[in-house]
Image 1: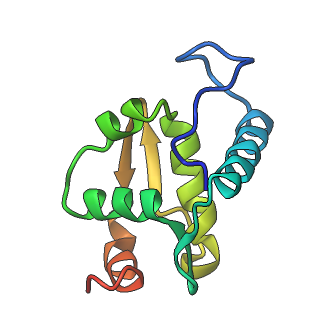
Image 2: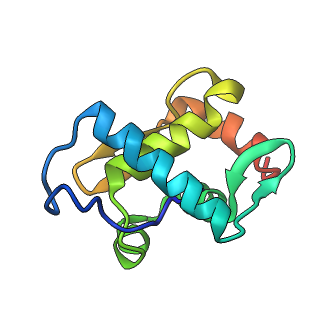
Image 3: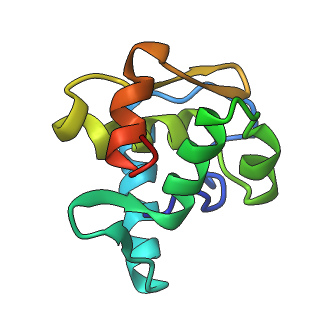
Length: 119
């Protein structure tokens, strides 16, 4: 999905976004990602390669802020898309957005490792 697509043309960088803004922007990015030929990393897992790489970095304790910034992404939207993609599997939010940083919810570390084949 369009995890790292650009910023919304209707908002300035750093501006707070409503849930509807994030949902609409996420849908636009998802559709753009399909047009770019991005496929899920596994038919059983609704994550694209960028999302999988981000989760692996979070599992290693790495900051993903720089990766998101380089791709002109917005941490709030990236976190929302990750949580949405894994909600059916986990049933809860697996990452949280704290300012410009995305943080793994530690309660789900083992579940995520298992889903990604890392456990």
